[in-house]
Image (tube, rainbow, N blue to C red):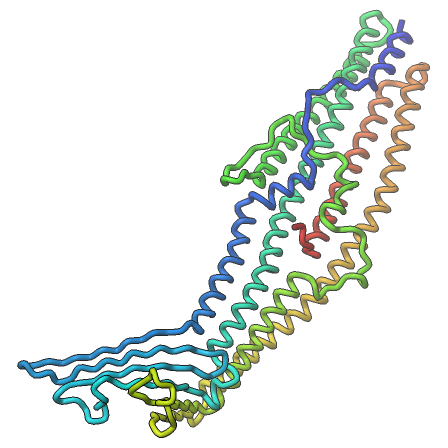
Length: 464
């Protein structure tokens, strides 16, 4: 009778039980939701919109401008003066401004220099900066910097998005780990239940002692305890995963019990994260978003330095305007009627200008040093992570061999128990060792996947 019950137990202990209908969400699907709907990702998109708004603001410095200046004074029925000055200005790229002007003045006490023909006076001319502001000026610099800010915002957005994707990926890997642990304890709980049932029946027919029943029950309750702990860990991991899942209308969603992770994530992680094994010599670090962002910052500071260097020159503004009473007649504008002027200014010590230039040079130097240190740090991090991944592959080979050997020992111990040459204590001990090493294998897989996520975070590839 004892042998019959043990044979039945060994046969059914490996039979799986039907599970409820489940749906799998892969890492690629999960990250797709995060990239599309997560609020922080949407905030990252605002960075580009902000830089585009700043670029529009910089372009506004080149907008044509219409100005009207009107003054009138009347006292005791006497019109002292009535002055109208309307102008239309068109700023151009270099330090040149095109200007059209109309003046009409009248009055008893009008300044003689403001006396004009009865129908007013028209003028067309240019103003030109011949030293400071000719080849570079503030509005030119701001526009160039605005274009660089847009490009910098695009790579900064990629860094921000990849940062949240990195955190979301680690959360998914932790969810997968707790799921695998729960599945492991569930499978061994089924074995413990069948073993306890078989030993209890043997005890009832007098084939086994009460102490064997007690030992089987202890093992059963230990499996139940571990399963309950793993269930709570899995529940917490599921809720943490839900923090990254949103709908289009900024509505958070929660992972349901029938949704499970993809247990084949290890085979697909490289395709999802673009983290295939790379030789450090094959990686072009200059295309890294962090270095690109610092590069755009360096270009912007270079423009700032050129502007401050230009400010050391004297400020010499020239203007020349053709005058005419009949603007509809093109030939009426001639060099015989004109209005011209020059404005010169130059600080004697240039302390402010020299200080601004020095600060610009220091900022540029600081950025160049940051670029060099970032390049070296990225190279070393990538190299270290690749070596870590190689080590995990080797460790995984060891752990697979250990699991296989422990499983063989457990099977042999069960066979010896069937032949009456072993004890339930030894079977439980072998099974506990197998559980421990399988948990190590799950942890090792999680460490490997987390290192892949770390490599993704370092490389920051585009997943668009």
